[in-house]
Length: 284
Image 1: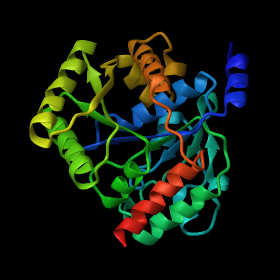
Image 2: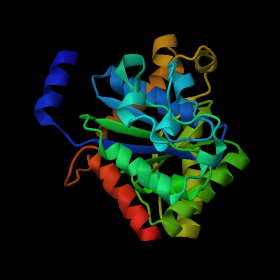
Image 3: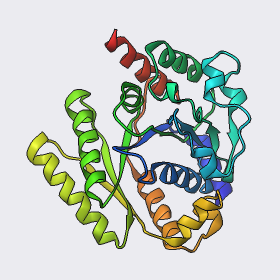
């Protein structure tokens, strides 16, 4: 079945789907979700690249258990090309490592974002999914990345501060940047019903105060095995494939694969590059 899927993908050559995963605040499991959905999609024969755009913390390589000798700071400094820093993770996920511990890069300048645009324009990989793990917060570089994505996932927990920060992020995305295709992922829930209720609550506020709506993607269980997997620097699919969290990621992958496929004139990562460039032009 796997070979048949790969052959089908080769013949079909569907456009790369660009997914941005963000959160209003740190500590809600955004990187864990980004890494695990990337691995789950890759395990199904998809060609997946994960870009760790959290330039302050850059934890994606830890979540995947990868060792990255170089990172994105070397690209921005002109010392390495993007291809030279990419490392392969579990199930063949390609990781573009972020610049860990370099706080200056958490809020990129216009020139640096232009450098990122140039770096990605040189990539020629035929990707099914390009997943961007955003930094927490509302910096303009985060919004530039989100604007360049086709699907936007917001991770939150059932905690007052997380809900408030997620709402603030969505408000900025909708009112200030006119972004759509926003979906909510509830993390660390006791039941799927809890996650759906959390979504309905925040969506109700968005409808009442913003006159808009967001979608519900799925929820991830509060699972001890997922915590152990994080400590072991392994994706849950490898660490505990029969766990509730692994099943949740499998269901989430089903939903992601069923999302509308957005095409672009150039195809592939050119869509991301074009949208990033357009955002920079709007700022000037």
